[in-house]
Length: 373
Image (cartoon, rainbow, N blue to C red; front, side, top):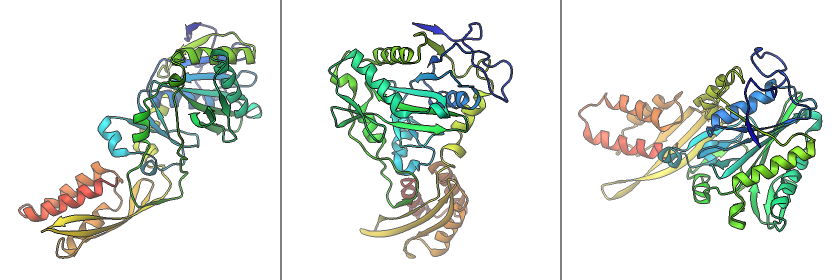
């Protein structure tokens, strides 16, 4: 049974600290099951962290269901240039988000169910949560062969990954969240989670590629709605609470005071790209000049998402050394992104308004540069 979750009902949380009185006050005994009405990845991640930061979970565990429109979500310590195809994402309008938990990169769409298990630190048990999901799946389809692994993934038929795991452990509260592939676009997943960028050297946490499969491919009755209902029922039975799924709006400041400031942080360039661990790019590419292929060498150090060291080397007879040096110096301190690079190079080109050959060479070079960003 789904019922709206609002300030008018009694299912309001007990806040810890620093939260206005308009927030949650009391919780039903034993715990709560929530489901987001939003498909915005930033809103759902924001309310997830709001619950972690402000709710007293002692004796009151929470299960939170949420689904997103097409988006790629990287772990807190990951490098997006290593993990996904940013150029394709820009072309397709796919959002990129960095979550507060660790773990690897995942693709989200409406065919993927996200579940967050909130509890206190002393009750944290990822395997227990995964076994709960397995029991729920078997309750719907007893013939399903689904097993939890030592890496806290769920495998279908011993080989296909249908769920990945990440977690955040705070001083008192923790959450474990995982995916469940129901009917996700596997073609999009495969193409978006494949980085085309060459020459990246980084100590960032790297994802481990896996062969995946949708549960709907195994059994067409296993829709997202059926699976969420089964997991909610199993969670309610396990925690001895009523099987009610309370619908919430993550953007509602009357229920989640201050949540929209969290949304803005998660949407910001500084969080998504600027929190990338320091890395370098060391690559070469060729340009065609008078039927001859010329080699361009590029070395960059990137810190906090900005270019710290820039060394682009092109043959002197193709691009004069002083102009190459000018390009190098202009890029230092700029964001490692194609929009800012294009803007800076356009400003430099105004210094030579009538030199169309130079403009052509510079544009070729900048186009190659944008291809690695």
